[in-house]
Image (cartoon, rainbow, N blue to C red; front, side):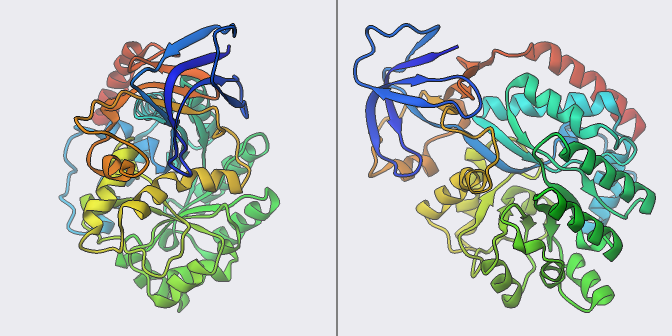
Amino acid sequence: MSILLKNSTYIDWKTLKFSDCDILLEEGVGGKIVFLDNTNDIKVEKTIDCKGKFVTKSFALGHHHIYSALSRGMPAPAKSPSNFYEILKYIWWNLDKALDKEMIEASALSIAIACAKSGSTFVIDHHASPNFIDGSLDIIAKAFDKVGVDHLLCYEITDRDGLDKAQQGLAETENYLKKNQGLIGLHASFTVGDDTMTKAVDLMNKYNSGIHIHVAEDLYDQQDSIEKYQKRVVERLNDFSILDSSKTILGHCLHIDDNERKLIADSKAFVVQNTESNLNNNVGYFNSRGLGDNIILGTDGMHSDMIRSAQNAFFVGQGFDKIDFPSAYKRFVNVHNYAEINGFEGDGENNLVVLDYDSPTEMNKNNFLGHFIYGLSSKHIQHVISNGKLIVENRKITTVDEEEILGFSKDQAKRLWEKL
């Protein structure tokens, strides 16, 4: 199906150049877009009048956790956590152990819908379900494909539930990578021993992939690494050559020293910032000092709204980070560069959003970044096109029955909460 966007104002995501034009989209992964001045004689299946609207590349999300989708409103843990390790132990590790096939499917479908309606058509996810590992990534992939959102998935390999579970995570990862693009997921240094780390790196090299891992999200990670291995977390990862891959994603990177920052800056790896999650867990504040340019943004499962993530990275960063309008926007779009550099499919040029931005002031190339930080929000996303296919039209999902899926999710959430 070919789509024509008429009378649009196109914003080039790389240069921020504004162009008044009609846009013809080719459907399919890697499909092209063509900018035209006159389309009166062109026949297409779908025409959308974008007069007064803005069109730009759809968004990409650098670090999500679909496994947390059913946590909203869940009962309080049996014990109130007093530190980050206890937050993991009594909340998230309790929740992910309770997930089964139907809960994972409901989580993936509801998150895919939320991402699409928030303008993201390419999502990098880091999944965990220790008591339902085998086939979990395929369940998530099929759910995202059904909604029409492309993805880069991994399973969170860890020793925290024993070496048998770690081996299952390794096996699930390899089975998935045999047929799909993806990453090798590791929880964090403090739950991954040298044997499991070695096997994960072997998979990385075998499938020419990268490692997706939480790094020094809390001081506990550093203390554990120094005590067990007599080296800091990033030094340990570097010794395993994990930083050699441009596909590697290092999550958080809050509690790192100058040498670790230099190791990252001199490497090919990307760092993903998750501001609101850090605030929620009270673990500290992101500082980009000395990390280089390979910084992307994620949500860490807090929500699926990348505009919100970029704006909060800017606002919170005023007191803790060297961040301005251009660098906030650069981090926002850098997932596109990550995908392009590494040849991942599903984030091509025929992924677009149409913004119905009702600003009381003019928006143009010179002031776009001010509008991006202070004006734009997900409520302005009217249409979303993924691989040339219209998946959100007039703010409604077109590919699946959203009401039915949310009903299914609510049922699975009740089941989950009863198990907690």
